[in-house]
Image (tube, rainbow, N blue to C red; front, side, top):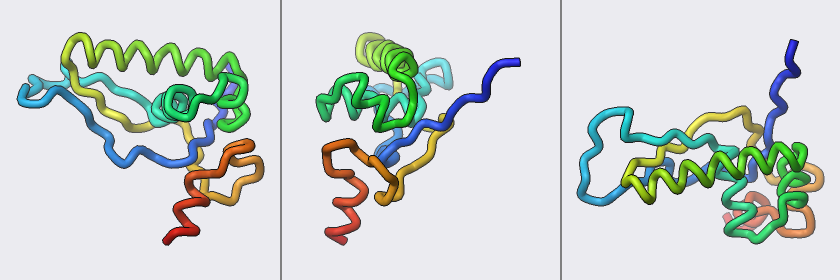
Length: 120
């Protein structure tokens, strides 16, 4: 019996969940590429925030090999969208959304959730 999937911690859900080519109507589900919220989070942490895979794994509370697999999957999906002009649809995944108070949140960096709460 396989182990149950461990929830991946994410700091925040995406504010925009659909991306696609401008001016081109998609023809059904085959034109949409599904991306999970944890794949989005890995792209955000590694490519946008410049974290290493080890730091990203600690932040999300999963193994580095899990982050590596999620990152590879997310990059393939982004490439399909860019190269083939398909729509990206971000939703789902086994996640636990950070409320800004979780221990070890964002490692040495400031948690975006905590920062938003201070400025509200």
